Image 1 (cartoon, rainbow, N blue to C red):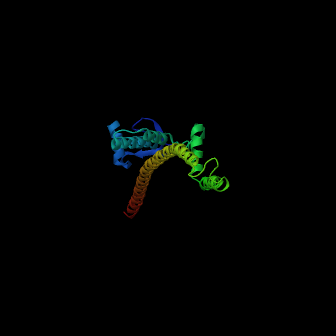
Image 2: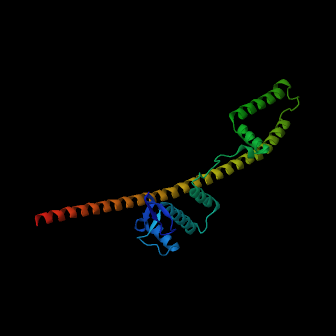
Image 3: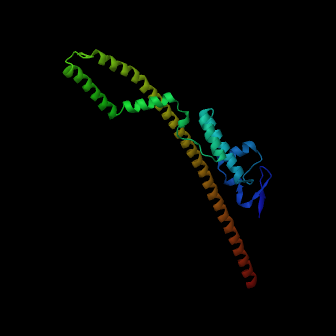
Length: 233
């Protein structure tokens, strides 16, 4: 198998992984020259080494844009380098939910349903009918239903903070989903950039191969023309 020696690491790589310095995008080329000043347009390196400098350039670009990488961006860069997925558990782990949080979710879910509204209306109608029509306002809560007002006030006082607890948990879930979306979108953007770099490299490499192929054909034609001229002379 044919190999070549990298001008950066001095190691041997398959000839299929060979990349010329003149085929590299200028931004990446400058990044390589900053670390290896002797690297020029005629130097060689492997695709693996080129990908390393691409990832290094992307990290430097992000560092320049936001002054410093936050934890989310560091996680994205790490997953991109290790070729891993950004999110291992995109949804909330049910084992981390406490008993009180489950109760708050159930209360909020039931309190915002038609089942609760209709059942509570039925309860009010039964309470009023019992005291007004059956006990003739001499029952356990005659008109104006002071005990009923006390019960309703207690329910409202307890239900409001429980529902707020559930809303706070929902907001926390929304924030986590927004972070997850940001990480996925950032990784997609970086991968698209790397894909553009690879496509540009393939196009440049293909053009270079066609040029060399044409040069070989021209040399062959020149040899044929030379032989013909010798025969004619």
